[in-house]
Image 1 (cartoon, one colour):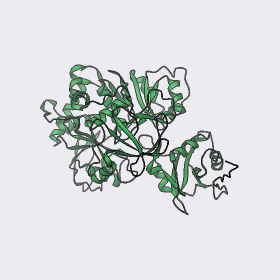
Image 2 (spheres, rainbow, N blue to C red):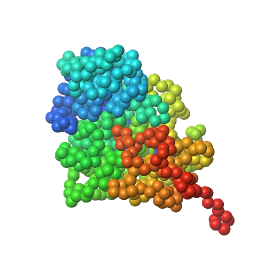
Image 3 (tube, one colour):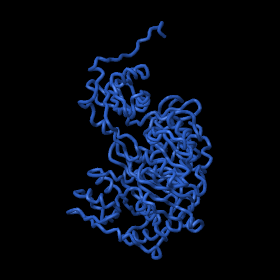
Image 4 (cartoon, rainbow, N blue to C red):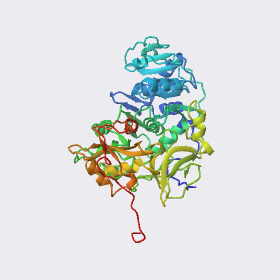
Length: 548
């Protein structure tokens, strides 16, 4: 079993007080102690002090109470990141209700599925999204509040659409007597659904608290954080929560922009940290260098992954960094020390967390071998409480008393963990398991490649073949044959892609992760280059005793 290291220093595995982890108690205490301190800054220029935040939240909570919301009920919020979304979240939790944020890109059957799965009777929706509810079968949804403008109920809808004026409440009439504990469910966040229908992750208050404090615990009292990930993602909720834990402030913007990131940092005048995941750091690294690059207020940034580009970015702009591993269901079980020099490292188990790498029978694999990461925590309720309404999926994920992440890792001799691939993204070719992550890393080394995804596509013989989808750097052209010839000395023969497809753009999720499923489903398209058709065939090297 892997040894647990006692880091980061700012995480204490003991049960925190309600005033440090339960949202209602945090707001009440901070509004009393630091009422005039800034709590939030929004992209539209509006802001809250802690006193103003609590007053706005209590008024909205009273309005939701009049709409029938009580402790344990689910409030569906289908809104972009901004003041209305934060108000919905905070007001729901102030009542002890469960906040259910939905991806604003949802539509059709996926939208119908998550609304019905959430079992929520009340939804707050952006007025421009209400029309997407037309034709959906939503038997449990009773009221939709149109936010930001008027909207009409679709023909035949079984719910009523209300004007947002119904959210104008009176905090003085609020009944806030419901008891709320750290183990109560705070949010239900839906997974991406890449391996099946989206699952709602039941997240207790302690889980979000632990995630926030591990990811951004270096924040000091009163510091500010820039939040540019969507609030239907734990990457959007955890930094906001850490700001509350530290009695600090958050600057919330609706999405990451490589062109506006530094403008946003400087505009706030006080932002000391942020989060950069996936290709976000790469976008920033492409910007033209300026003499005043280091003249910014950032002192530490949470980044993933760690590679030469992200390390160079931290030196260029003068901030420290750390990284780790997280997913919606857990609370950052792996984390590095500051300024980890090992590219690709996700660190080691944090304080209060045990991690193992196992085979398909949950038997631990030898160090250096690849296995699925499973985790368990010392403090109860700091990870998910299961998948909402899905007992079988919950039992599978939590079998043998450990949570199974579905991610493959390896561990080096020093104890550091390295992400290899999602199990579902592993490509199986002629008896060999291939890490799409490792193929992508090799392709990125080519000077003409900007972005890449690697997926398995159906083989005419058996199992799968490797397809890489690439975009070219600005001003460059990509020759598929030249790319494959570049990869031959850098990858095992069975990992070298058979197919190369050059596209102008790789679609992303709202958290800037590539949508691999688009290319996996499309398979081999007419514009895909095939190295075997081109006469470039590879074979296993046969070693003789003399060769060896």
